[in-house]
Image (cartoon, rainbow, N blue to C red):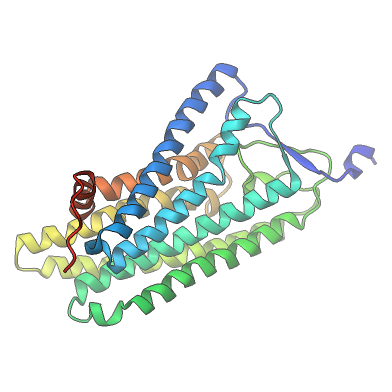
Length: 311
């Protein structure tokens, strides 16, 4: 047997998105810009929610958690990708790769759960407004947020364990710009069927189950909105849901393509990963800010130095 295949991998070589120097420089500029907007947008959104008392509602509480998940999600991936775009040797240690994979899954899975909880919040606010304050208390909101983070941690531990318990010997070149389970599994020196099955089942738990809850919630919301007698009421209900629905489509669409569909080409997989790892965390605060009157009002108040109204 080849002696090389007996050597356990202690580090991985990330091949990145391109081997061309000029392309990497262009990607560096684009990724740097996207990361700057991600950090600024999410921190600004969190700050506005904390400062303005009129934003101290369950919807914005969950939005703060979503912004935190987006911020950590992007920070776990983009800074290292930026360094590698300017480096000749794009190396990451086995331990560093394991940590990146674990954190990537924690924040990504937590965001999946948060989006489903936010859809439930919108369902209660529109379909049962009289009981909404009694149901969505701060205690309930805190427990739901904790459940989202806990489920993200548990699912990520399962996926990471099944991915990293496999032997990695010989080939250490990851055809990706960060450590992601599908890209790692192809390098394993053993049968990966169990690991793929476990990841698929966890995908059902953290992707398809929340999507089902979202679809049911919006099914009831649509029925309720259609039955509304006034056009203004319909528009108001739609405006509170459209931003969340857009974020759901963007995030879940790319995640399901990666983890719940038959294997695609490496290049297609990397492009999809760019979308949910780099672009989506940047778009979320922009979508919620540009399409939300309350957030824009809070920003104007802060920018003009006006103290937020406290009832």
